Image (cartoon, rainbow, N blue to C red; front, side):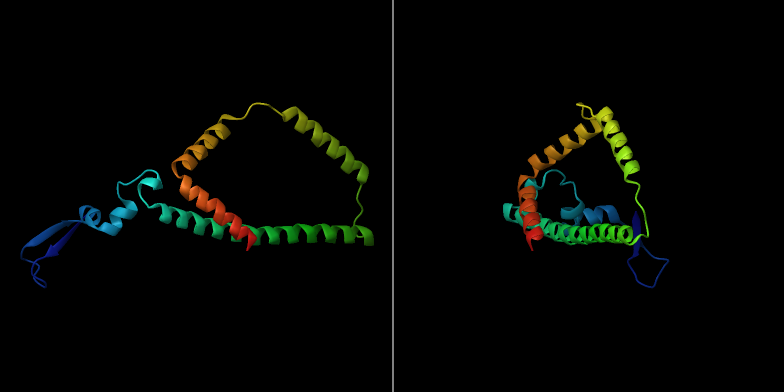
Length: 154
């Protein structure tokens, strides 16, 4: 992408200078740090303290949000069970326990049939990717895990 700049403002019939915006952006230090060719593990880009802080802060935020959402989900599920039990007790709904038991047995049999000792290849490849990422970014991962635990505790 190019931008044409006039060397004489207000005069459109004179000389123009061509500016390559891609090259201009590459020469900017902040742009190069964020989006430059410096790809790879974060260990090559940032200091140990920076990696631990980034991992810790993102881990704490994730843990805190996970805790709040978990409490909300537990409250909703528990409240739903409570309302169903209350509706059953007052006679608004009737549960056919024999049918529930029959369906549960059927589901257990299907799970036993599907049970396999082989792990799907998609799961193996994703697990390998995760292990590779953790090995390359051990400090960020460690900071994230510690921050996550602190976020869950707060």
